[in-house]
Image (cartoon, rainbow, N blue to C red; front, side):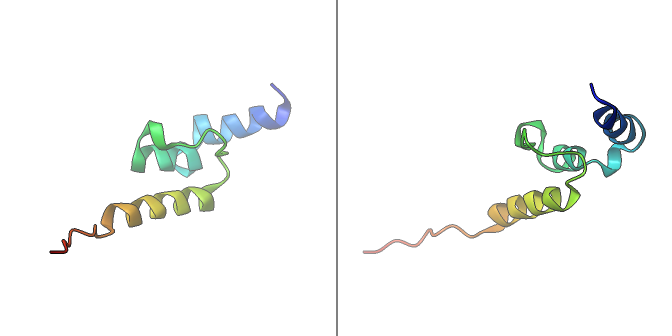
Length: 67
């Protein structure tokens, strides 16, 4: 592993996992919803993913019927 990757791993995975974008999505939506291409530093993207999931959960479904 290169030095930059080691530094990121050390900071986000070992010292500050609560500030890790992957951890934020994991805690909010579960492991299966963490994008494989989400980097630990992409906190804003993580927030958009979480907000998008919340919108989907609260969207009303069209249960009207036509007679």
